[in-house]
Length: 441
Image 1 (cartoon, rainbow, N blue to C red):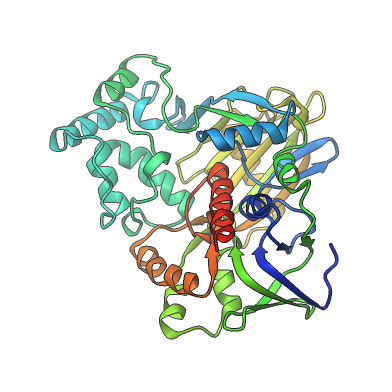
Image 2: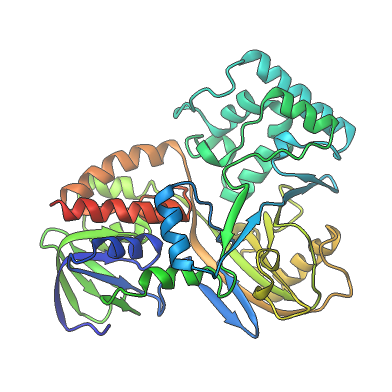
């Protein structure tokens, strides 16, 4: 869609990721305009076709729990979908153990297993109600110690999450854990240390993925019948008093409702100047940036696993996934496709050559790659606002920001707009809820 110098719409939607597309999709006949800075829709749910490979921006897998989204997404994907059973592992202490770490310690050195099980038992005795509500005033480190004990916290919970969020565990809060951190019972921990149980834990034990085309297929499916999407257009200023947005080229859009799905700090920056309390709250929003390194390897079946977690500091990455184990069409015949997630602070100041050399060395060390393997393609995709940092400052800031935005007719939704840790299904539901609210006004 080509924009005129001046546009007017009932609802302006910033960002054509899943939350933005879902909002437009569910507005139906209600007038809207979607503005997206990239040349294609999808946001972080985009895919790239390069030399026979299909790469996503990290692992984008569909964990569906809501009947509505299950029906919608399966209808959008049609027959172009595969169902996968999670086969996730952890590599630490030079050993592979099943995910989640807290329920599968068998295979680790005996001293580590003892440390984990005895620590869990000690925490269990101090708190027999394993499913207690998360205390929002409690640090993530205190919550881990009280929930899993010192051993599991020391060997996995602390190092992995500090690596992922690039933030000390004692400065984070625990209110993001909810569905994302499996909570095994005492008997599960003991059995996972002594035997070879294979019980599923967590919200993502199974998932769907497009058979062809990568996760872009879902974004394109939502956008298929949406006409008012302007790509390659970025918002530089929002006059929130006059309800007018200015784009990079000087075009202006007057709106009644604004639905924001771009990162909340970017929205607030565009709205500047803001009241002092709002500016102060904006500065409290912290995030972690990562580098997604997509890699094509000239060997099929590099691994049989879905993905592997790496908590130890000696590995520059925290997770490695294998897209060709979701669907073989992600790579040419005889090749494998990997996505490698790297904390940005571990590669800051390094050249691409140095980053690849370090990654390749550690992939060989962990027995994923062989020294004889040839890498046929590498793609670097930096993700600036990859993970929201949950801390006490965030909780306080959002309690100030969201009422202010709502008063201006602005709904800020989705993973980045709502400044939260969430998955794709939730983004689609956020868009649906925003559209339904607007339709009633």
